[in-house]
Image (cartoon, rainbow, N blue to C red; front, side):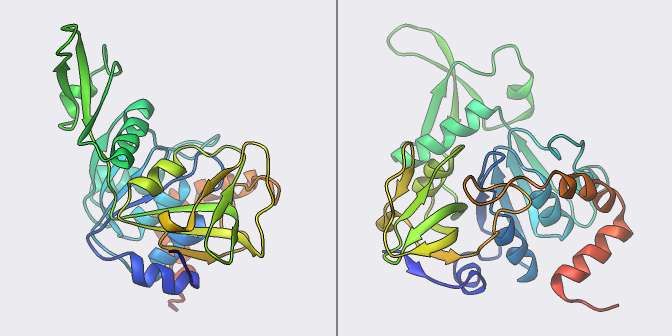
Length: 269
């Protein structure tokens, strides 16, 4: 059953050096506060997983938390590149970064396989791309029934998956709505999971189209109002487009980024 913890305590208990960590959210409900708490706690040697790493992953990479990124697209949406990501890949700053690139469909199917207890997923994607030549975890497979050539990708089972949602009740049942991406699958595939929420309520009110994660699939819940900012949380706040634009100037320069990082972690010059 899910425990109700502070964000600091939850990250301290659940995220360890060397872990494979997924922070999922597709333009919406991105667990930014949790990612920044990982930075504050100076976790290292992480294999970071996400379909669409954006600025919080740029921050994690720039802070030296990551040794590897498993992903399907990376960028500052609507703005441009992730400069800390680029610097790590091109110049090994602050540490070298290994990359494992997939398609969106491949990543989603990997989570589904992990959540289903299967060793791999099969799909028709990747045909006509050069990804199989660049990524060792994309392999051809022949259908035993039709002889069709397909593609297999291994299941994703993160050590810990972290997502953000709108609400949880005091028993740890979680409710989210709007664009939910692969948050459910990421939680079900993980060995441990943390859900940050806008609020903890006495009772979850039914909402059309809402996803409910029952308490027995969640390890911990932390109440973190505004925990997805500068992304948005449907029903609570809108996307802060100016913050994404401002990050481009911070992220592109090592000195400016280091100032930002020192402010986040409380380091004084």
